[in-house]
Amino acid sequence: MTIRTILLTATIAGLALAGCQRQADDGPTQLSGRLFIFNYRVATASYMITLKKIAPIPEGTTAIAEFENPAGGDPLVVRQKIYTFWDKITLESPDLRCVRKDRPYSVSIKLVDASDKTIQTINTEVKSDLDQTVLPTKPLVVGPVYTANPDVFKGDGSVDYGHDAACPA
Image 1 (cartoon, one colour):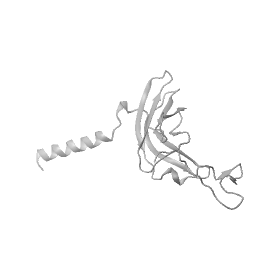
Image 2 (tube, helix red, strand yellow):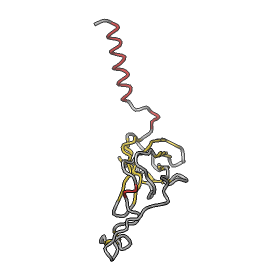
Image 3 (cartoon, one colour):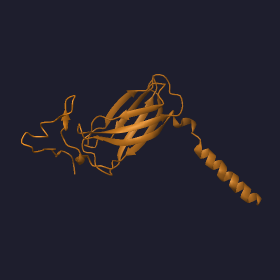
Image 4 (spheres, one colour):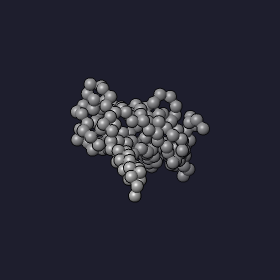
């Protein structure tokens, strides 16, 4: 083995190890999951983002998540207090309309400390493998015992799942 080969191998190994280390300014969390949740029983869709704690989180930290609104308009903003003992942080958007299959939607998450100083920013995209048209526009069930919704399941035996005509094609 030549000196050149040994140096090249050592350089590659060093770069590989450096790539595995977390940079000091990365922040106290890392993105661990992102998806759309479709709940057909109550006819809702929402974003769900999970973060894994990888370093201490200061007391009084808040997560501010901005979710792209699939129906258009201003982003949907969620503010959530983060507790220092949490190992996993889950951020969920309000109910959505007009989610389209295979379209990337942007999500921006900012962690701020008690003095409103940004300690981490995460930008990502979320794609759905389903189109929201698979959901009914009205809940299939109502009440605490999952009674069939009479607006969907008609007395004459017909079924009306509805269609959200306000969503752009």
